[in-house]
Image 1 (cartoon, one colour):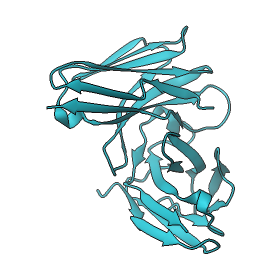
Image 2 (cartoon, helix red, strand yellow):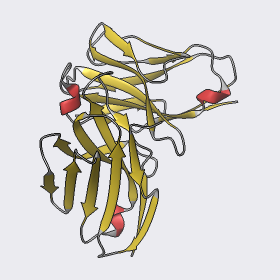
Image 3 (cartoon, rainbow over the protein chains, first blue to last red):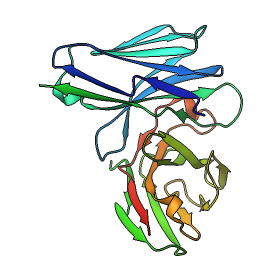
Image 4 (cartoon, each protein chain N blue to C red):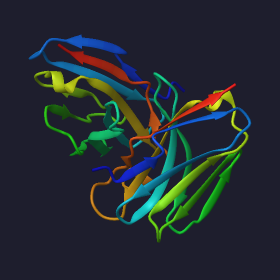
Length: 112
Length: 116
């Protein structure tokens, strides 16, 4: 099973609303990253939060990390139609393979 | 900079055929990797490399080979294509080698492969 699991699988909101996506993981991590994928394109890095950080901001993005609950959330404020995409969390575990493990993603649809 | 370039964009193979998916990056990144993306399953790591001459297996390596003779290139070879290898393949790189997980991954735009 996946190390990271996003929730919900799909989300539809109106322009201007906030969108919240959650990611849960199973084992201790070094960091957690969020990526965006537009249809037919490669993934684009959004933000990285380290295991000793609790919150990070980047523009309209806010990411939180709760290592005690093994979960993270991505908040997009004042969403735009251009935010329509799939969003993935990726984790690097403390032990094991030296690579990022991706979840299955949340598909966000922002209605104009 | 072109970033990460993958060729071809689309490919159709018959079962049993072999082919090489090309990946090149012009950012002097030490770390390169290959993922496959299937509907509902996210991205799964096939192989990765932390530097020229060093490769390692990922989560789903069977049926694929890689080599890393230069920093810039990381080709993925399908030895004998099977319908189960129908997928979208992404190459990604990052700036650090052993500490690559602390750096963002830069992705190519993918190769969509169909095996009939």
